[in-house]
Amino acid sequence: MNPAVAALLVVDDNEDNRYTLTRRLKREGYTNLTTANDGHQALELLRSKRFDLMLLDIQMPEMNGYEVLEQLKADADLRHLPVIMISAVDELESVVRCIELGAEDYLPKPFDATLLRARVRASLEKKALRDEVRDWNRKLEQRVQEQVAQLNRLGRLKGFFSPQLAESIISGGGEELLKTHRREVVVVFLDLRGFTAFADTCEPEEIMRVLSEYHREMGQLILAHEGTLEHFAGDGIMIFFNDPIALEKPAENAIGMALAMQQHFAPLRAAWTDRGFALDLGIGIAQGFATLGAVGFEGRWEYACIGSVANLASRLCNEAKGGQILINQTTLSRIKDVVEAEPLGEVTLKGLAQPVQTFKITALKS
Image (cartoon, rainbow, N blue to C red):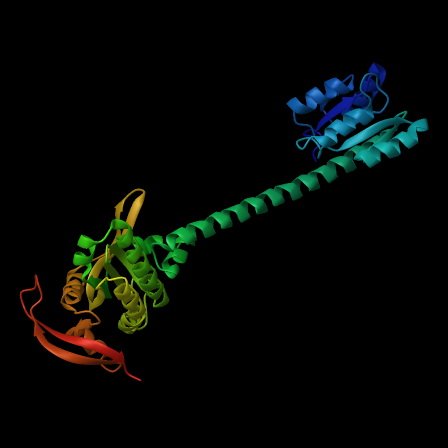
């Protein structure tokens, strides 16, 4: 540590000793010097100003060096300050006690210039190293806290996005993905058959319970098949594939998810039937280009998929009977080698001018 920068506190009740010690320290280049003539004054100074080293006399009235040292080491803000004890030659046993209490070193009277220089310099160098270690520890602690906060944010984001997207956003690479862009996607709509009649006749608590069971079961399958959840709207759920994370075979992911959903829905349907609820699941799937990106306002954003492909998937879902997965011919042509499907002919879908060649997915081919 640069002597001109180091802040030293000299504590001694004897004025001649204070003068002698400060004069020799100035010769060594230590100019930032403060003196105290008793222990109380020393502690007041320590709590009001930053010091790098204290030279402390043992024998002082009212509050001796031991008591000052004990209070210093008991204070979390001051305990790291190095202390060199000032002692007479016949006080070596007292010096040992001070070292045991936490003093850094000792300086015998009368003062020897070479010894003074060596012990002050060594104490300041040790302090500089300890300060550096503490600084690294603080940075490490801060980094750990940041990582914990990052994990917490990731956990919250996974509630809205797929795990892959959430991790990308957290790591700093997701900003571009959230900007408006155009991409070919596969859109899947789910809807409960009989939900309107069910909602009209049941208590709100029962409706919430059914929706919770339904969302929990379907949500696990969305994540398992790398889908992006666009939104929940009561019993309606919209999912799309191939954005913001690109997939090698998005249509196959979508079909696999839809078939798994119908399979996992069966126990739900049976349980609800036992409770007197007539509910079933219809699914619609379509593939095409859409505009995607974050929509909303500061503090509340959603990731949206906008385009005719979403509208088509929704209309196919509306047409699907309980247990059915409906798909249009264009989408089926992309995956005809991997799925089994039954033609339903041209179906007039609400809101679409032209009939749509529609197929019912029955299984994945072996």
